[in-house]
Image 1 (tube, rainbow, N blue to C red):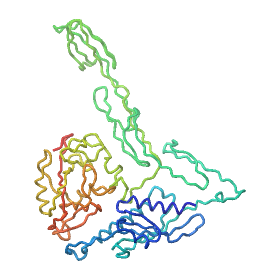
Image 2: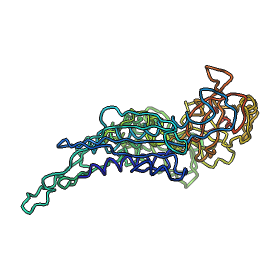
Image 3: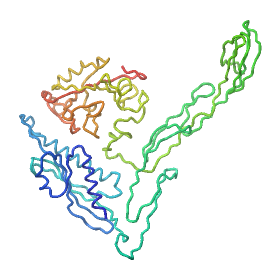
Image 4: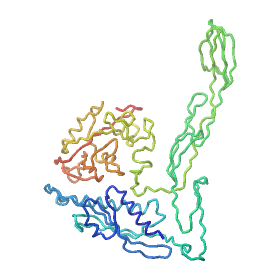
Length: 492
């Protein structure tokens, strides 16, 4: 019987991985909350009850997620928001609960448990000491009863044999096999695959149960033309014609002719002379001269074989990104936050490079190739403006920014552009090549539609977008950006 351990450990591990949780505990919460305030943000697990259903056990659990509410000494600017961060705490801790519920509902181990019905979340304010606020979520989780008659300690109990398993891909190739002991469970991670062509060259990588569209293979025919060949189709070239090498002396008189078969070559030796190699229809192939007693190797071109497109292979694991919160992949993409789906103009998969396609960033310019539309791409000034600054000054000052050899075109990003580089796998924009302090409030150029005297900003600690007035300047920072035009591997 492992159900209790499975669900409590899974909830504990999920909460501990959340950047907005500092401490996870269980037990009598009144005793726990008498400890120091540095344990916040704090999450607490309570098992309310468990019901035996024969083949399953049903657990009723509550998880309390909370944080300390900070009171500001500044004068209240907004009656609704007040002069503390209570609204931020409630929003952040509800996000903690949301991520936990998504893992329980759609995570990798949902074959071991099942989240039932719709969990209920109730907010609280000043419920405990230290002036905290947060949410309590109550939920029912169904766990399989893995206890069998073979688990009974009886001298004459029968022996339950282990079962074997075999996992195959879509072409019936065995990927994994093994056995599971009686009453036990086994989780098998299905690895991603690569797509190769007939020459053994790796063309692409593919997620388990994913698909990939392969580009045509460009083969060169015997006449020098490019022939796009679809993936999985063998290329057959057009046979080249036989040719004849015509040898002439310096006076232009023909000395000899030498037949050269398609795909073959001939070594021509003669006194000072010129030569012309042509197909039988007189189409020239090559010409030149040869000194007396010397020779020149003339080859009639012909194609041989040609590369063959790839045959798609995939495994049978199902992966869902329908929730909108896809872990470290970010923004629904099929790769991680720092890796592109396809190569950039510099033939690498780096999402962030400098203007030369490397990751040196010596000039302070960061190009985000996930925004490349074939003509334009968005670039960033790697260095944040750290001085306290109000909105109007930021808008004006950014237009005078000069980074490297790019002395114009810089501006404050709009709220969508600013939010696009937030890494939800960490703390906002606190990663290489950027490294902005978590406490930064980053200005956007977008005014609040309900009151244009306010604007949207990014709070780098909670990865959240909020609104503030355009006059205040305390702790306000900005990062500038510009649009680059891409020609080959040159940015302008």
